[in-house]
Structure formats: C-alpha cells, structure tokens
Length: 81
Image (cartoon, rainbow, N blue to C red; front, side, top):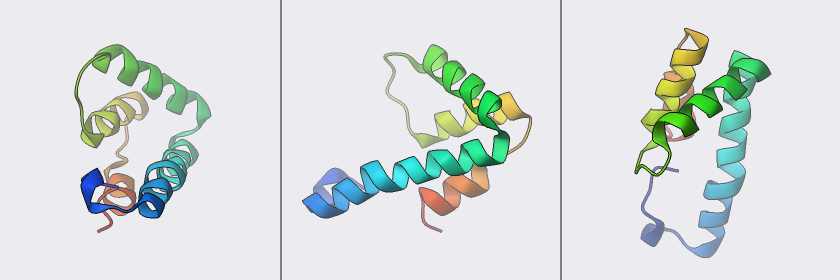
C-alpha cells in the first residue's frame, strides 16, 4: 500500500487501496478491540483533520489509545516487509 499511485494499474490500485487497506484496519481492530479502535480513530481524526499525514500518524493514534504497539501490523500490511 505504500506505493505511489502512478506505479499501479487500475486493478492493483483497487486491491491495494480498498481490499488490503480494509483488511489491515480489521487486523488492528482485532488486536486492540473494537472500543479501543474507535477511540483511536476519533483521536486520529481530531488530531489530523485537514492535515497531510502518512500511515505512521494512524499507528501513533492507535498506540496511544491502546498502550501497545501495532507497528508490526503496519510493517507487514502496509510496507509488506
């Protein structure tokens, strides 16, 4: 998911942007729990409204809400490492 749009064809874009992103967010929700996930999303939106951010801003919001780390999920799902 961490690729410029211009490097993807239409099918790749759809799979990475919509399908893989949804699965990534579900993996985070599963790890931290639904209520903590909702708290993290609210924190992320409140802190970053109208800002240009990257995926690490969401990771920070979740980490702050759960008192844990979801960096391994970001590394696996987004960076594909």
